[in-house]
Image: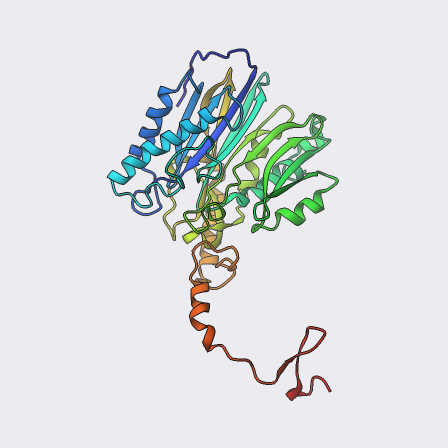
Length: 395
């Protein structure tokens, strides 16, 4: 859908792109946010054009609604976040009327308190001065969590085998800076590539604890990418839905080309999520029309929408993963799904207990606590090891 408006650019020459998502109800389980919910959100955003926002695009990935907005108010703006909250509230009313599954599940508060962060919805925002040509790619996911972007963002901004511009583009040869969040310990660290690449990998290879939040171009600290890193189970204290991240990536002219931004998804990788948020599975790149995960509530899906930002307007989108060039990736993802599904409730298909969202394991252990008995012939020694005296392992 192409939309061009004569927006008031005001005195601020910076533009902000905000992508805010929430699951407020699914049509028949966790498969799809129906049109009625998207239309409710569109009606709210349309009323705010030229007053709060400049332009918008509403889409869905599975049962998640994704609000893509451009404006001049900067990141974490109360009016913009309040607008998104209002849109989700209106959609929730309809979801409850239609008795949709999980109606309003991502809205963890009865009232808005100035910012959607910590209230359930996921949020990725960046502010920048428009270049002569400003292409951006917005990624939206379903049935996975923020760490799903660790691998592709590393490939985009730190792997010359993926991004030739790291070798051939003088504006990128100094590398990129990664802002990595410890989502469990609630702290962050900045790591520079290529010098600190190995330390970066040591962290972001841990999908349980570390997630890339932002990427900056080192030569001028210009924002290049941002991901939503909210984890609902840490916010609510219990499982209320998978975190289903969104991301914004700037492309071309000093950043990876659009083809380099998309290339990591040509080789599907395993991500946490899928059924009940408790399994490993492949993430499959699809067009908007195919973003309806149903098999075992999956596999996880990711869509990529390309926009040209023009005086704050969102020109597009171009449905980038609808390209037949990703057919092989989809086939490979389905093959990977077949292989991992054979494991059923066994690891490595099942996530380790510390990563599982839905799990009855603690209750099972509690019920069996009095039935566990010590193994005969085992003895703890001072050094912390275990030996079998009855087998003569120690004297």
